[in-house]
Length: 414
Image (cartoon, rainbow, N blue to C red; front, side, top):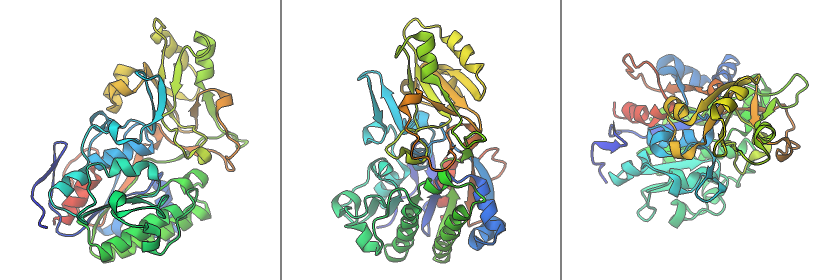
């Protein structure tokens, strides 16, 4: 089917690709990971892309967590537009804390859905299943023009729901363990097979940050991961695709000299100041996969009881070492482009080497076998933005990671 042009999504016009346009989101890819692996000669294709294509840094959205940034990339817009402002949220109307992975939370169509509506073939492969439904919103799987499946649930994918029966069997790779580098390798391998055999017009590949939570950029296992990625990137590049490589967020060490997590337990403080459970601290990093971060990140939001002295609470929190920002809801909405109805009365951000926790007894840190590495704040906002084509960015002052699909389709239209 011929793609109807132009494709408009959330106020942006996307070019019609002549070759496959691919955006790759390397979860947790602090730019230093690429620098270290390239310096060791482990990523020759990405090195060439940086030298002969377009090599820039970009900013992720805040909070620098997985769901907000993947949906920003998918929609080309910040959370104020698409509504996904965390992995996890509190719904005041129900009094419940819930995962923000249901399509009902999505307030804007994805670029994928708009390309699909225009007649394009769209492929999406995600490592963790928590993103699949959101990324696949608006796609139909009854005409072999859309595929959207996860590595995590690849044994049980179906044509009706995912566009692909038993993806693991189709790929010839066993369904990977969720806490493994294999989960991301499955995504890359699936992308290569889809491009070779199914020929999508637009493809999105998004990984897991298991490796980045465990290993610093100079660790051999981290370098091995990027060496593996480069081999698949080589194949995608050789098949002629236009590729943008970016990330949802960076990753920083968040631990003390003895290796123990660096944490400010803010719910405990609020309980002390306002009375037990009078305020409610929400950690939007929370998801079903807390083994590698213990639900500790650098962004939080708090709901205060009626009549509380908000300015007084803000002042007391700002005085705590390691907390860099304590903002009113109104200021956080303005500064971080967040949906006002999905954050609390105040928003907190911690620095490069500090995390924010709820109450100390609520965090199970027994599974943290390595010193904590995490994300969520402004210090994890800088991410790679690399294109395997020369793109004229003019005098654009700041790239965002959610420009990825726009520039992938721009490169693919050249």
